[in-house]
Amino acid sequence: MEFFTRSGDAARVKTGCAVLGVFEKGQIAGPTGEIDAASDGLIARLRRAGDLPKRPGEVLLVPETNGIGARRLLLVACGKASSFDMKAFRKAIVTSVRSLRRVGTTDAVVMLAPAGADEYNRARHCVEAATEALYRFDELKSADKQPKPKLKRLGLYLADGRARSRANRGIEHGQAIAAGAEVAKRLANLPANRCTPTYLAGFARKLAADTPKMKADILNETQMKRLGMGTLLSVTAGTEEPAKLIVLNYRGNPGGKTTALVGKGVTFDSGGVSLKPPPGMDEMKFDMGGAAGVIGTMAAVARLRLAANIVAVVPACENMPSGRATRPGDVVKSMSGKTVEILNTDAEGRLILCDALTYARRFKPDAIIDVATLTGACVIALGHHLTGLMSTSDKLAESLLAAGEAAEDRAWRLPLGEDYDRGLKSNFADFANVGGREGGAVVAGCFLARFTEGMDWAHLDVAGTAWKSGTEKGATGRPVPLLVQYLLDNA
Image (cartoon, rainbow, N blue to C red; front, top):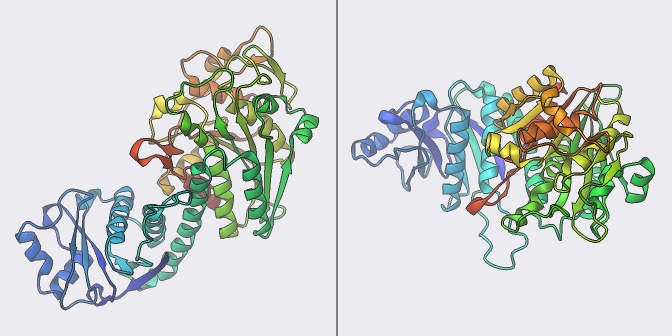
């Protein structure tokens, strides 16, 4: 999809379709009013006839026009003008683009503007939402693939042509974020027999080979054993698939600060000996959503050529039951030297992350952020709307929360503390890998915090936000927008 800007008299903009907002009480203003006046009151007549769309999400296609540059109009219901914020704007873009898929037009110009948004953010979110609306994962289908949309070019109307440079920068950033999110979606949507740890490692190698200033290192199980990564290797003990520790090192600002991103990469999670129930187990291919999000973020960084230093560490493995699998009650030693009693083999994400967090220390990061589909408890706490955030640094937590707000990829901070941490007590090891059911998401965060002492660390639990179930089953690409925004803010 090609994105561009247009300015000047809205009624004179030549396009296959102009996308216009219709608000409650039939308000006709801005570009909609200009086009109505130039078309001899076309929209006002539709309003009087009661034909205008009313509820947000409804649209009306006007296939023929007179007196204006647009050959068609797509009128989109936007609710109250005072409530048309960035979230509502993105929903309107998704609705519009999905409607335009079914129309013969090859180009369109969006003439919607959320309240209070500058042209950079308007352009960026327009690009991200439009790309999301067009995304399809059908590469594994042999038939019944949806035809490619005829819509090839989407423009953004600017009331002030002097804002074009800011809008173009928004387009540039939006395209990079959207591309990174699509990388994350594709990797997570691939089935576990395709997206293995070896496949993820190969993808990372290619990304680095295609990116100046980025290097890939892939550690095998023998190297992990030499490093003492006993907790990571305990998870992969029961599978035939070899584990990989993927390291992507991007140096865009030599001598500057370094941010480390650590992504949980369990490409299939059966639960191990603590076997999961069959319903929904197919969705455990999404248990590498943290890894997908981190690799997608690195793809966006590569496209943006950020002046920043970012290292991504992805422990990738499967969690399967077999005669060699780790058992509940086993005690393993982590790379940090701390011992862990494994009470539940389905609490495996924290076991691979703790060794990856320890490994990431060698890069001396100024901030370290791990991303994981870690706990069902986080889904119970926050549903599928907000990513769970835990951190030992108020400054880092506030920066990530602000980035989520700006990126429309929000998180919510959960507590940490001794009251939760004491649930990890073990009679046989330094601590256990699980506590009780209560506060399970926070207890998991406390486990990871034990391996990040002395570091500015944050944990993002994306168990509720990395994918959707039901008729819309598939990966969401979150938290790529949040992470890229954070990196942009700190570049």
